[in-house]
Image (cartoon, rainbow, N blue to C red; front, side, top):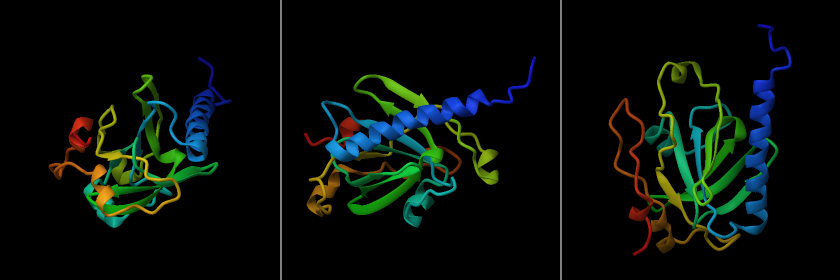
Length: 178
């Protein structure tokens, strides 16, 4: 078989990341339309990822965020995005390059993209789950407004996962106000 010198696999991955980039840029401008919401799984140790040491200690390999009801300051560039979220009543700013994203899923229309992510040498030896595992539910705050202390209960994280295992899957209903 002939060697692929054009690297169609890389071109396809870049094109699909462009779909995610375009969707997030539109949401940053106009907000989430209808029932759309996103599960975004990313490698926490990938180059360019900026999260607090508290989150990195809790999720040393990968993390999934759910952008649905409360988030703030969503900004999208050609290379990545940043967003404000609340974890256990603590506001956090996450900066995520598109190259660190493993999965993008919109359950409202059953649309899913999976990406290859070049792992750091230590992380490459460890196995990661095939499907995203939600760890936080994010609800849209008033646009351009800082998070409010009382409103930050919308995003919580599950119990600490056991060492050597990925994050526990948590039902979205556990986070919704009843």
